[in-house]
Image (cartoon, rainbow, N blue to C red; front, top):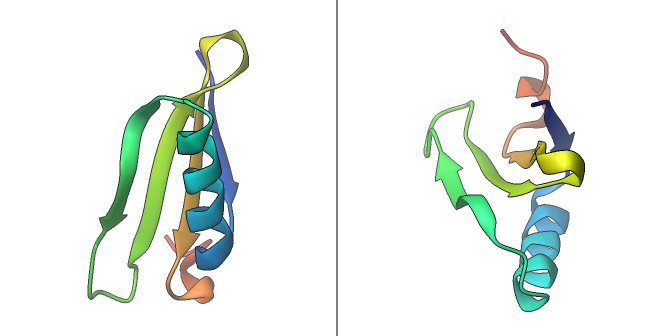
Length: 69
């Protein structure tokens, strides 16, 4: 199984989650906020993609944290 991440802007991530939900897509990882209030705050959700692979969509409150270790 592969794990594939897509990084979106916060507003685009929310819109995509709403569209997928409206089309009956089930979420393996329900839309959620992680690390709320911290500089690394992010939102994420995950769905089954092609071949049963996990497709995770994330958005960061602070864009500089995308590649932070």
